[in-house]
Image (cartoon, rainbow, N blue to C red):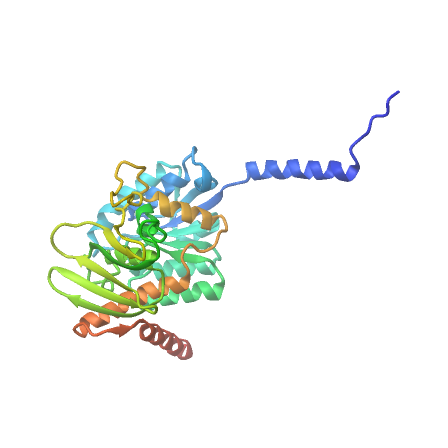
Length: 358
């Protein structure tokens, strides 16, 4: 009778554990995401992407489960009009509306802070970060530089991963200009976009932030000084980088409105793509390709919520906000150059004063 050779016990266990591991990974519960604030359409857009039963790739494996609508900001008409509309819209994706921040935090693994009003972000972020929830904060991070610094400081102190970004950063036609084969190493860029302001947010935080973040997306960090010239038709901000590169932002106040850039490199000069579309080829901007819209940043959020690294570092985020504060100060002082390092130094000194005072 032939001898039947059996798999050694240790080998059998390895196989069984491997099979079990595959089963667990395939059946793993999705990362539960909660929303704080529902007057921002982006909350609906991200929910639709994350809760799509047919989601693939990085967007698969998340689920928005609860949302706290919050209260509309009475001095922001868009907030008043949008809160009931977007609150109803997220329920169409089986999201449960709850009555408090705590109910969201108890039910989720990660948080999206989404009010249009940046004045509300610090309080909401404090609750989320102290609860140890991975946190994404929709633009703007805050309404003031003081709040922006405080939020990121608390994230560091609690060791809770937290980040913010404009969706424009991850538009293929903008982020793709960093290593564009027809441009080469980026030596500078001229970015332009809308620049409406509101009395309750620091200058440039409201909408100019989109284009200023595009500027940093293309240039990278390292800006040393900023100057701003302001007229009734435009805000013109020039930044000088530590390696001598120069970039500008034109904030459009009147006339035709478009979000894009011209990029200067060691190999060539090219227009950038337009929001939502890909990089240009031989100067031609594609418009019939797949429109990404919010999908680009949603992919980065999904990877982050699943345990990935910060898509944008705290250092770069602080530099972007210090850049805007430096531009604001330059504007007040009739266009004199302001050092970004001075803005950051003053912010640090203020934090120390507040800490010692407490």
